[in-house]
Image (spheres, rainbow, N blue to C red):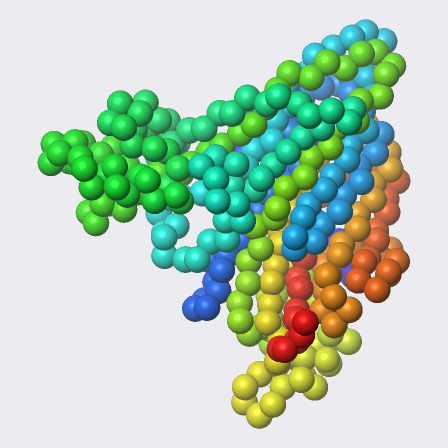
Length: 322
């Protein structure tokens, strides 16, 4: 793999939010970028290690933090889900992996091996303004992806519908326009000098298309984004039959890694494992020192590291692969 193409975000101010991925062409589902924990800014807590596993079925990450300040402290920790909804949301097939009103990724958390009770905060945002109160007053659920909002909008009076349009909540076809912003958060105690392990796991939102659109000469943006190597391009060319193009389907995952000075030191020990699922699958992502550690797994390790960009992972499956 070639030099890193990471993008900033993973332990940021609690006000930060994660945004969805791009919408692609026909027969395509778009992904929602998600990432790791968010902490309020702290100069007392250091991240000793981060162990991150990513596949198309699961994301698992384990952090080890240490309060090295010499005094006990309490920090609000949050996990923002990807923003969903907004203008054009229903024009594309966006991948929402879990059929739930709020927890669309099936996010769970353990602290020192025990489940933590989180607080749910969910808002309906239009142009930067929170319109949650208006929706609640008019008995409209915030979750746009479950279908309940459509039925509630259909039951509005003409006056209510006109007001909703004026506020930018619906368009002329009564389609919801608000962005759903969901955050799970809790207060975490960090005793002086005692390590704290925080783990979470969720199902990633996986984008995809039935046939890869990669230009086999290596000139397109996909090749640059995922650092696709010449050997993979050669395999794609060899698979092509006539004018039908490479006989591979395409999936992609975006994972948001964060930097920005919100913890005391760089990550002491960072480990990433990417699992492509089957030996026949091709996988590509940008990183340094990546090595194969199993039939389907690849590892990258860093010491005293601050990631600078997002992680974008491309999976290519041959047609007919099990």
